[in-house]
Image (tube, rainbow, N blue to C red; front, side):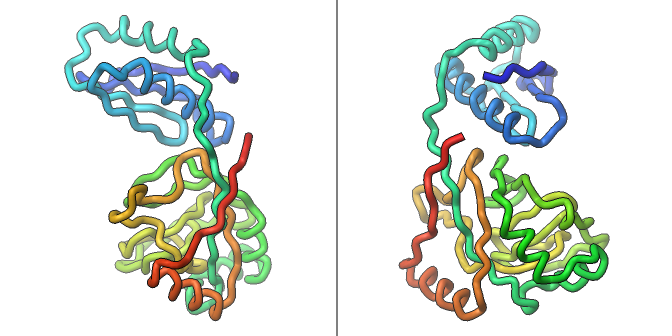
Length: 244
């Protein structure tokens, strides 16, 4: 088990912010997840809300924290225990993406400014396995880590007022998919026909923190075929169990 030097900070009268080293890595992600599971067990009798990001956990209590230092001491002891071995199953999800220029609105700009052919952009984007760090911004928006440095590209100074649902994009050192139509400043390189968020499903978003994503390049014909199956609710997204 990795042990990091964590920072514990008061975050208002009812919250404690726990911070890991300022890095985005799978090692930190797994440690955050493990600690989060310990917290859920330890605080099961309390009314608390636990949220995590790339390298932090925010615990919000239902009541005011009367003794911050005592609570932090308890949390530090909990972090060092072997209270739980996470049995959570992680999956690798294979997401089809059509990179045709009609969908990849910013492919040519990225290609020109980064000096990378469009075909190579697609190869670089599909060759990586991306870690799902957490969900946020929009319901079903996956924060992914692992983008090839050759594809790093700054966000737009003037965001688009409308980015279509399913748009696959690059923003600085990250890549992601717009789960719903919304304004956005990321650079669009393709589009997926699958749904990332469906409020009518038992699990509205198929993926969770700790999972991995692999993008699979498909033709426009294949895109249309998958889209039709998605509409008919007959499409099954490919995935497999992974072990770290």
